Length: 238
Figure 1 (tube, rainbow, N blue to C red):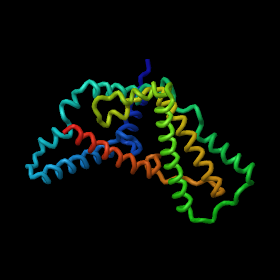
Figure 2: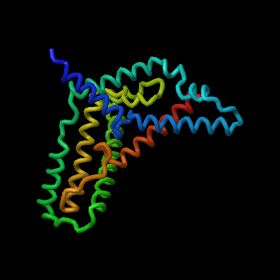
Figure 3: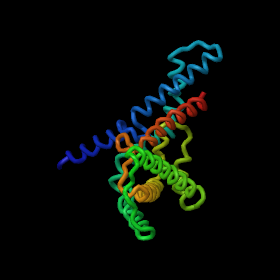
Figure 4: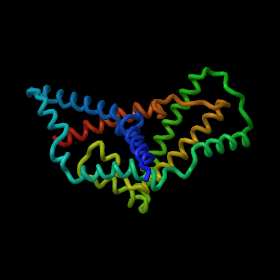
C-alpha cells in the first residue's frame, strides 16, 4: 500500500494550517495574538500596582480549566476533521469562482457592451480589486452568518459553533461540515461577483494584492481578529 500520497497530503495540510498567512491558526497570527494578549495582561497588572510575574501571565493565557476542558478537547477533534478529512470526503465549493467571474463579465458585456482597457496605473486597479474582494468576503461572511441565524434548518448546522463552553483559537474549527460547505459556496459566489464587476470596470484582468494567495487586507484582518479574540478570551477567563 502506497502511503506517499497520504503523507504528502497530511504535510501539505499542516503547512497550510500553520504557515499560510491566510490561516486563522497560522503561527504568525497565533504569535501576534500571544504577544498582544501578554502585553495587555501585563499592562492591566501594572496599572493595578501588582507585581509582574511571567508565571502569572502564563496561567492567565493558558488557564488549566480551559486547556483541560472537554469543550477544548472537542475543538481539537473538530480541527483534525475539518483540516484533514472534510476537504477529501466532502470537497469545498460546488460553485466555480472562475466560471462565475467569466459569466459576470460576459453578462455585463452583453448588456452594456465591451469596455476599453483602463489607462490608470496598475496599482490603482489592483488596489480597487483588492478592496472589492475583501468587502465581498465580508459580505459573504455576514450573509452566511445571517442566514444561519434566521433560517431554522441552517441554524441546526450553525448551532454547533455556538455549543463551545470555552473559547480558544481552536473554536474557529468547531463547525458542522454542511455549514462549511454552504459558507464556501456563498464566498465563491460573492467573491466571483465582485471580481467580475471589477474586471469589467477596468476592461482587463486586474489582480489583487495578496500574501500567500490571500487578500492582503484579509491577512491583516485575520491577524487583528485573532489578537482581539485572544484578549477577550483572556479577559473573560480571569
